[in-house]
Structure formats: structure tokens, C-alpha cells
Image (cartoon, rainbow, N blue to C red):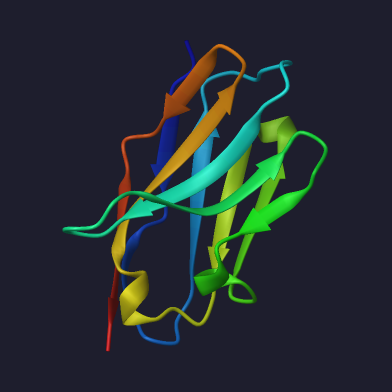
Length: 115
């Protein structure tokens, strides 16, 4: 079992930036996909960004050019840099690591963007 702990959420004005971190309790040598998801009230959880073991990244259309996912394998941590934040980015953000036979989630961190 791997525990994921998010940090870095908070309240920011529109146009501002935040960096979310997701620290894993241990590394995994298994092929995996690391991702950030978000869920706003009344909405389904949606994928924001992901990065696979080989380094290929994927972004939701709504965040392309503003958000960047990255990782630091030495620290068992991956990140979501969020720039030019908009009120519609307000949500609880969750980190996720999944692969064949496993699927781990963090507890979520609130991001609120004021207009």
C-alpha cells in the first residue's frame, strides 16, 4: 500500500499561481501513471493532467498552456504547477497513482480562485 499526501492548495486571486505537491510514502518500481484530478461541487471528478513512467504528459484542454505536471523521482513526489488561475479552476484537487493491479488516491486539497 502507498499513501499519497497532497499539499499546496489554498486561496488565490484570478491570475495567480499555486503549486500542488503529492508525496508518496514509498517509490514504486512498477510502471504507473501519475495524475491530478479535480472535482468541483456538483461536478464529476475530472482528469487535469497526467504523466506516465516514460515522461509523456497529457492535459485537459481547459488547462493546457497554464498547468504543468512534473515529478521528482528521487523525492517520490510529483507536482502540478498552476499558473494564470481562473475562478473555474476552483475545486478539490486529488493526486492519483495507478497501474496494473493498483490505484492510489490522496485525500484532496482545496484550491479556491477568487475573481
